[in-house]
Length: 567
Ligand SMILES: Cc1cc2nc3c(=O)[nH]c(=O)nc-3n(C[C@H](O)[C@H](O)[C@H](O)COP(=O)(O)OP(=O)(O)OC[C@H]3O[C@@H](n4cnc5c(N)ncnc54)[C@H](O)[C@@H]3O)c2cc1C
Image (cartoon, rainbow, N blue to C red):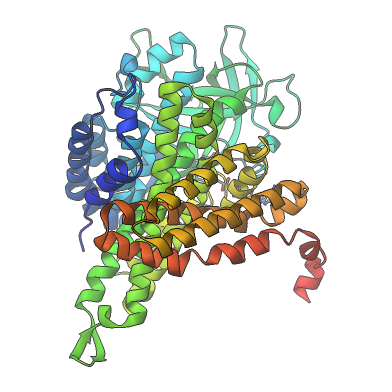
């Protein structure tokens, strides 16, 4: 089943549910009219369907390879990457003064989701470049910005993000890479980084690595980390790739999926680097990149979920098994298969709505500078990342299930979706780390941002009582339970919060997803209301179980020692 970009859902969500017109009403995004948005999405959809999607299987089968220190990308990836670059898609949300289009991140997020659904292994490359562009826009010196941004925004050069080391994964503060001042304002960066996505590619004339490392006088932990831009080729006076820097790809990881994406072990041997932001403030600069990337990874999950759903539906419509009262039946006529398909569709809509509302909040924050929008964006980022990628995994697994045995063999592609999307709940901060972020840092305002959002959910439910009284009551009550759950969470110490962080995040996402479905039902009725009924009556009730778990605290978990668990 060829991938079809879900344009109708995106358009509906942005225009009817999430208030995209609020963005067009700001001076910053005045050019992003609904008509422009539709034209942009349609053009991206064409690229995804015709150029990217046909590469998904090839990327999986052939994979990226390391030959004599150079990463060979799968056939077709180079041309598709160029098509993405030439279409201006990498710099969609970048600032116009640097060569970007200055469009809202909400639109960029739609496009990222479509590209991920079409070919995740390829999409991750441009996504990391986008994150680097944002980090440089905010933190780099004028000179660095002038040299690098136009080339990154045009897609001529690529960008990577280098945090992870063997002993420093989630615990970034444990990293050991070093940076020594060279006396000319630049630094010699030394160390090994692992799992670096798109650390090299045969078709890119230059790759710019953002590397976290420690200066000689650095404090231990995250407070002592600085950020450096380390290009593969050092730009000459004209800004073209010049001398080869002393860095190399040592090997590629052998992975469960995402074979078309080169995941590199990188070695830096006194490679020349330039400081980005202030000394010892590298984490702050990197967080700019990571927040962008977290939303990008959220929609990687949604995009793959969409593709897995489309494929499962098409398969189910053609697969005949068993009988119904009217005769031999395609499996779509069986209630359990219909349940799985409806669950997939409802969950994708919820996860997409949460991710896009996060993007709208980021855009509104940058257009207005209002702290409420900043707080909203910060609150939604971990929810969007964890729920979007959990949805990717769960929907892809349901896709395998609907295919039966054909899901477990590779020809159909159902298994590839499940393999490829698995990593999205691991990288960019595992989903456990996202949940801890939600329950600790994002609650440091005493829950103000969470309560403001819950108030809005309840106000929308009140408005929807006229059209869907039973659904509105369910959503209002679930939001109230979330409010009480949040109050209980705020009384817990951090250890207890962390023991319930993942179920708390899930409950929050279920309420937000139900809210989006209810709004959709209210404005559109018909099939949107039927889908809302599935989301609210079948999926939402789990919020109560998750909130109950979140109240349980940590003691019972620590009462079971690793030895007890092994007994
Ligand atoms: C395909 C792929 C691509 C990647 N791309 C990049 C990249 O481009 N750049 C880059 O820098 N990195 C990249 N990574 C690395 C990725 O971000 C890390 O794998 C991730 O941050 C987790 O670190 P870890 O693997 O060391 O797991 P660990 O940190 O060892 O975590 C193992 C488990 O312990 C849990 N855990 C760890 N610490 C805590 C804690 N304090 N509290 C509660 N639970 C905890 C985690 O949630 C997880 O479940 C990539 C990884 C993969 C697999």
